[in-house]
Length: 477
Image (cartoon, rainbow, N blue to C red; front, side, top):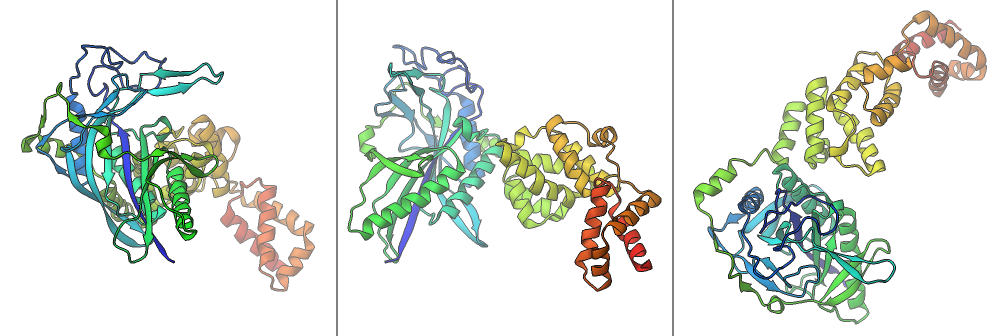
């Protein structure tokens, strides 16, 4: 039987506010345990929450950037559920009256565009962190993260493959970065996803029984988890089993999920309006003020890069998916006046370095101007493309200006025709078989000889001069 996979996401993004959602404690990542908290964070009796206005503004900005309707009235609710890392034993969230509703993002997969609905975006507080002692002395609680503001972005079950999930998540991440709503540092837990997934026979209208996988904090893990869970459910049904409605944990090392508990219903949380917090009233004037602060978003920037800078659509899609990478590229392209060459370096050597080192685009260890000057050195024939790769590696390690590296290491292109001709004659003399191959019409022999010449000159000979002078010497024979 053929099956269709149905996927919806619940994405939690920590907001980039300076202080927490209901108190003035810092949201800074890290710190000694239990040093970024106050009586409110740790649930002391009599401590009352006060809503941070910036949290509402950031959430509205995220809603506007994702085509949501902004609610003029919303409220906050207590979600009664046992959180061992929330001292109050309930979480302040939003249930029936979220801040944003009915949005969407358009994605493109395999050349086909598709709208993915966003059911709601609501604000809530994050929980603390449990630390399991490796010596078996128990579990400790760090409340530093408790009360850090979150938005939860809940999608419609509109996605049908891991590719669509990846495209949606990457686009949403880019929008949150561009709007500066969240820093989206997944390695620090600033952005994480829960996956709701079910399968059904193709053509069936009713949804199957869904499972939820919690707290995935890398795009790679999200893709692998979707693919594993879809396959697991299909195999379960094929062998006559039953899918249980449950919450599952993803083990990224083993590449599989396992059951944690049966899935809770909304009624299990016993939501009630929080009596300590006023409802949130948002007028149209405030919405328009926030709308005016939204910068150029990824899709618009992509179109501009294609039309103004002349780079391919594929390059523009990859580069604009990360705001820090797009900022770096644009600054370098403007300084070099050779945007396509800059794009080639970003898509090739630069992204490889980022992948190999695990660094984020915001951590590139040299300025955009350095890459621009490196491209200029190639365009001006000061260095060859091969030497440029050596300079790039040194630049990555030291952050030095490429012109200084070239000067210090003596890497300038050799343009002295007499010196190049001398090396060519030596190479011809040392490779008589290749010369005979060339004379008999084997064109690969020319490439071999050029390689030998470049090796002898340590890649510094002017390639155009090498080609011209080598042909001259071979024709003499």
